[in-house]
Amino acid sequence: MLNHTELQLLTDAHVFDDMTDKQIKIYTAAIEVFAEKGYLNASTKEIAAKADVAEGNIFSKFTNKRGLLNAIIEPVAKSIFPETLSSFTDSEPIPKDLSLHEFVDSLVKDRMDFLEDNQDVLKIFISEMVYDDQVRQQYLSKFPDAYWHTINDNLNLLKATHKMVNWDNWEIMQIMWSLIGGMVISFIFFHIQPTDKAVNHAVAALVKALNPRL
Amino acid sequence: MLNHTELQLLTDAHVFDDMTDKQIKIYTAAIEVFAEKGYLNASTKEIAAKADVAEGNIFSKFTNKRGLLNAIIEPVAKSIFPETLSSFTDSEPIPKDLSLHEFVDSLVKDRMDFLEDNQDVLKIFISEMVYDDQVRQQYLSKFPDAYWHTINDNLNLLKATHKMVNWDNWEIMQIMWSLIGGMVISFIFFHIQPTDKAVNHAVAALVKALNPRL
DNA sequence: GAATTGATTGAGTGCTCACTCAAACAACTG
DNA sequence: CAGTTGTTTGAGTGAGCACTCAATCAATTC
Image (cartoon, each protein chain N blue to C red):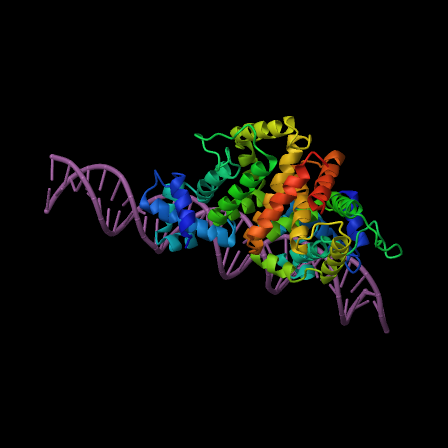
């Protein structure tokens, strides 16, 4: 069974809004099976059995096996790179005097929460991105512009106020996401739960790495 | 076709030493096909065709499809974490007064060379590690002790001489390998070639991140 | 060159899978 | 409750797959 937070997250993202009960049952069963054995090793028969539904339903509701995969991956792909940092809502926008530490800390911790709440779908997403060139192309093109904008703005601001090294934004992003990704992969594929200490050290490492005064 | 350096590397690692011509043809064809479409999407028929050999040969020489995969993955798994840094040979051991910068720089650049020379097999290795829990278990257990020893010794030395933060070796390793892994994944799966500048910035980031004086 | 041994071949086999579709069922409607 | 409409069912279908093995070919020996 999917854990409670994972289901809650999907509900909050309105994934289930225009799905029938049976579609939801198939959808959640598919997440479990895909996460456990991978898309290619999962059979529609097993998914139907786990959803307690006849196999034919999968095809009448998601057209084919790939359609089912896409329905699962799309919401993750859209939310994996956050368009805004959850600690700064619309009503409380990101302050102009944001320190490097605040920025890195809120980004890293926000994504660690996301990881905790979306293990299964993240596993499916990462596995298929790695395995299937088609999936890679498909979701690369959908990479949210909004994310690029906000992150670029933030980085430019930090650089302009001499709070961050003056490297290409792409390089800075790669360094930040590499450290986050390292913890994500350790957790999802090797079951190494990131401790608070390890997360804080990762944040500290990033803050030092991107500090301009050195 | 595999590029010349990749073949050279395999030859140097004595992978071909006790293989017949036909085995080598199958082996290199399999690397190409597995790297292009993934193990599960590759058919033995296609591999045989690309190797210009009858399908039955695959099974008489590698017992089954999985045996072929293992024959490819094993050499990578053994060499992905280097037991020593190539810039310090046996005759010229790692010096006691190694600076943090020298250490990080030689490690990162050594692995970037490795990446350059082993794109296809690395792609297969990473894809299968991500996709297949069995492969993960299989190669996790074979993780070279020798690597742990040398790297631990080096990290302990750097920490003892106050050249590196006093964090857990595991945390330090995760940070180092996350940055290397980020570049590896960008290159292999998104064809973003790491520029010298980007590599140097990654090295600089690591040196600052692990600097104890901050 | 006959005999023997070993390597090579690729049509054949059995199995699994995604997907179909006729039939059964359920839910309304007048 | 007959008729209609939409949903659900799961046995059936064709395709593709890894793997087998009898037959063929090549090399070697006497």
